[in-house]
Length: 141
Image (cartoon, rainbow, N blue to C red):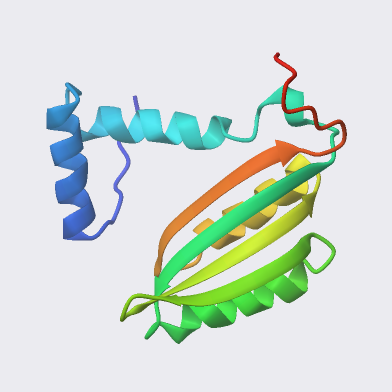
């Protein structure tokens, strides 16, 4: 197995170690491997391929990091065919929340979410994806 060096803030490393201890992992490497597999597999759900989807992406960042807000604006314009709606709100005393409503296919939504996640200083990125081409809330798979 290859050894990889990863840089991360001390606070995140402490949380990672605490998570490993609390959940019975053998160490941080095992947690990082599982998280990597989950991240890579997120958009590999074949039930969503070739379907019309709606995605909701929520980004939280410190309002003093204007680079994040500038990046959100740039991505909104770069993906204007995908972004159906965008909402900016102030949260608490120090944070901003950016919400994107997306309409498109899995690959495009995945690309957009990846670019958001790669934005330096974004504190959290959360998203959900649902098919809208044959929406039936009662149907079971």
